[in-house]
Structure formats: structure tokens, C-alpha cells
Image 1 (cartoon, rainbow, N blue to C red):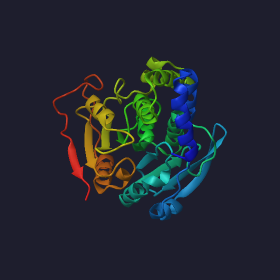
Image 2 (tube, rainbow, N blue to C red):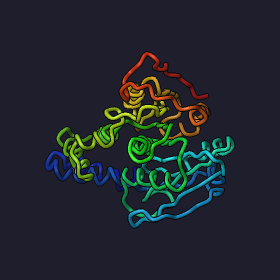
Image 3 (cartoon, rainbow, N blue to C red):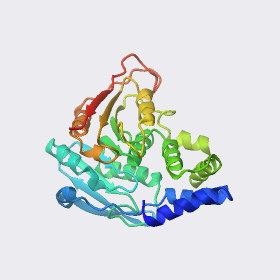
Image 4 (cartoon, helix red, strand yellow):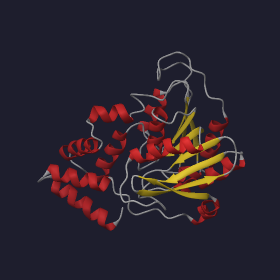
Length: 307
């Protein structure tokens, strides 16, 4: 968090006792802040620069799209909030070596893209547009907020046989809850903050759940899911990931790592192997059972300890 963001968060907490409405309004502003922009790590720079880059327009913003490889099968990568495509560099190298074509983007107001504002609708629309130009995709792989976007895209306009949600959550509620907890918002401010979040989308709480909750409205029957989460993730505890895995019992694999946290999990060998196993696999056949219902075939979680 930047110095200005820390100052704003202190003001939000103080203001909450006097004016919960104004405090909630400022909290929403901070929640949607994309600053500071993440830089490309030195270790990722070569992969970043090897990409074929193109700029496309999305609602007045220039969005930077990256492509690697020339294989027939394609995978789309979706970074998280305040992230960028280059975070996936270790996975990009593995996928290209396996013969996949890889596509990614920096969302508006992120990385090398233009713009100052964005929200999940941009991630979902970009997935749909790239699905038309570069797809069909064999898998969507999303990290953190990008995981939620991948789940949403797969449930709406970008049907795919496989989705990987890494350090993510099943619905916006988890992100709102963690943000409110981290900011120390009172219950009065937190409830107003959540309502303002929904209003930004022209929805109420029920509408947000219907549009973006992958537990209440799971992935289409036959779509395979990989859920990856580190037990020590401080930015997004894994409780919601466990709910997501349970909601897709029989077609979801769960990998719980230790020692990698929220971002370094993208570099873990066990995670790279799990994603490769997912994209190489045959998707499960529809069973005819209601989407998301549980079966006895649910897998046991694997625990991996960082070396």
C-alpha cells in the first residue's frame, strides 16, 4: 500500500465513526485503486520481451495483449488486481515448451496498458474478445482477482473445458470481506461499502451473487476445475477456495501449498506441474447430474511444502 493509500485508509477508519456513508464512499475509491503499477521482475523480463505484443481498444483504453508460441491448442492467462501478465512468465515458459499457444493481457490501468479505471467486467470482456480472435481456449488460468474473472468468463461468454483458479475466491464477497477486515472497517461502514460496490454494477447483493458467485452458480457441467491456494496466503485466506472446490466436487482438484503466499505461488514447481496436468488432461464428460452437486468421487486435497 502506498503512503497516500495508508493515509486514506486511516482517514476512512476515523471518518467511519462520524459519517459511515462518506467513509464507505472513500473505501470504495481505495478498493478500486490500481496504483502503484507492478513492474516487470528481472527474472520475468526475457519472457516478457519475447512476446508478440498488440494493443487493442477497450472502452477508451489501450490494452496490451501478449502472445507466445504457435501451437494449435491455446491457453488464456488472467492476472490479478494490481498485477500484470508478466507474473505468469514461469508458466508461459512451461506451456510453450509443451507446445501450447499462450495469450495474456495487462488489464486497463495495469502493467503496460492505458486507462485509469477498471473492474471485473473488463477482464471478462477481454476474455470474450480474445476467445473470438485467439480461441477457442483449452483453459483459462487466473490468479487472485483474475481467477474470479476466469470463473465468471467460463460461466458466461467464454466456454472452456478447463479453469484454474490460483490464490483466488469464488465470489466478490470474499475480496470485499478481506478488504474491509484489512482496513479495519466497522460493520456499519462495511455493509455500506458492499452496497456501493454492487451499485457500481447496477446491481444489489443478490444480483452480484447471481452474476459473479461460482459457488451459487458453478461452472457448466463437464468443465474441469483446478483450485490452488497457499495455506499462508495473507491477502486471501483459503476458506473461499475450499468452498469453490467443494461446489465442484468430482471435477475439481485442490492443491494447497505452503510457504509461497499470494504471489510467489505462481512460481512454485508444484503449481506449474498441476496447471500442466490440467491443460493436458481430457475434460470430464457431463454426468447428467445437476451442476455443482456433490458426489463420492471428490478428490482428497494434496499438501505441498515449499523447499
